[in-house]
Image (cartoon, rainbow, N blue to C red):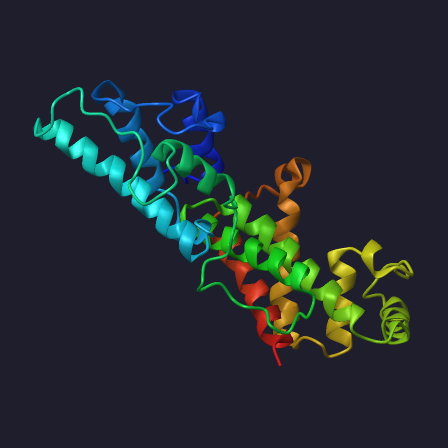
Length: 268
């Protein structure tokens, strides 16, 4: 089943009710029985929007619900022929005197297409709110990818989250510690070369080995993240063909397990 997001419903409204985006005057548009098909389609799409994407404050959410309910009620009357066909829906009493379609569009235009569900891991150990929010959105996308059987998306994105978390972990330490650790790992051939001075230029392999050497993550976490690294690299067609592997449920679960291990180790 396709995932419906607010911007898709706004696009549907703009196609089906092109006047809605710019309606300014009350009584400007009357919704009639002949609009039943488009209105029923609108309600169907609205019902498919995940609750976490309806990021509206109390008053705006209340208005949104009332306008959706008004359309549903009028459709029911038309279907039951309990109201004359010419009975129109102009606005909802007690709300802004604009078409419910216009007000639903306004509400959805202010809603995000991505937002973590309440059950998504909080990552409270990350003080940077923007980074924390971004990673929580990624975690929510990974959960949905697993639920939908989108194994490649889950595998690759979990590897990216691991990389972001390990970079963050290194940035919280004295850079000298990472440099010394990297030098040791080059000496014992764990790393082929000395990483760049800027942590942001490192690759996942370097993050994993240095962070593990510093004891920031446990050894069994390092083992799991090495698997995630290898599976994440299957995004490159040549590597996948050469190794005869592809992203599947096993690679997705392994990558996500590595990510969860890292989250656990970084959580105080």
